[in-house]
Length: 470
Image (cartoon, rainbow, N blue to C red; front, side, top):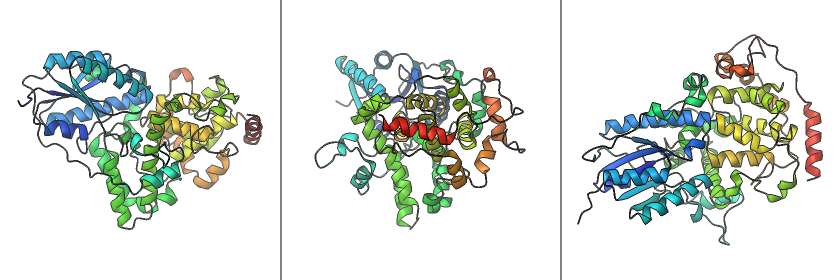
């Protein structure tokens, strides 16, 4: 007998039509397909900016589905309960989702799969967030990779399937189930007045992602390796926010980068290496899930980082340390929801080394503020810069923000773009920080720029002394 029951596809971080293996497989069955998003126990823990960005992605994808004659069903509750109830309601026999790898998602998904299977449903997770499954990439000894360079050498010549086409039609169920309203989920509520500011900078959806990729390959990939560390230059792809929410697949980017490499684009290989750095983060978060919450290298457990989220940390969050490059980066984060990668290294080094604050403080703040927040990449990035993670920045490498600014922001364009107090020219982005930040901070662009809260030289020496005693 031919199964004509609907398939439930559970969407989490995969809001696209092209190269969507789960969606492609479901549509290929010829059965009715019912997409559902659940504001579940994991999504509830997301920070303010990620939740806001998620809402934008959901709204955009829902319109794409409507154009195909489909609907995105929205529900709220624990994933297990909602999926069991919805499957029974619509008469579905199968529930599918795109596989996740971070520990919170794995715990949720494992419980969901067990409950659905016990209840007699077909429950299946499908690859789609990564090019290389973590268990499919192994050392010659059969273990997992702990060093990025070795991981890159292992995967760089591997076959990557060509991207799948987007569906052109949709089999709808006889009756669509009821859906909650997106506004009622209140995903954007915690952003308060900052939401309007973020909306000026975020680019939402699959079409925007493809346009960004095309523009990068046309205009910037040739000089990517040389220019990518200069935060005032339009030298990077900007695809991180789209990858974070699955608005573009890594396979689409990989094949586009490979075409650029074959055509002689000088920076294409380095661009592909950055994409594989993301894969490496998922590889590690799967094999060593403690990377999200604890020092990846256990010998760092004895290190005397301060865990106090005190007044100095608040100044760091506010971009008021008195160190212009650090402060510009922290305000870029608050205004745009993004921070340039070079700047991420500098602010991370300043917090964990000059200030001797625990990397978890920075990790949590980024989790609150980044619209491209990804649990694996965020954890690995913070542990890298703190020195306690894989491929770590050595303990003796304390980034000096002043020399970094002279090297990568020679004309001061980046600093001027985000610091209203630092010069006579008040850029739109610099002023937007004061529009977005909490009123309780009591900040104003008319105030004087603060003096440095600590000496960079003294902070470096204190860090080196502390590291030598760990």
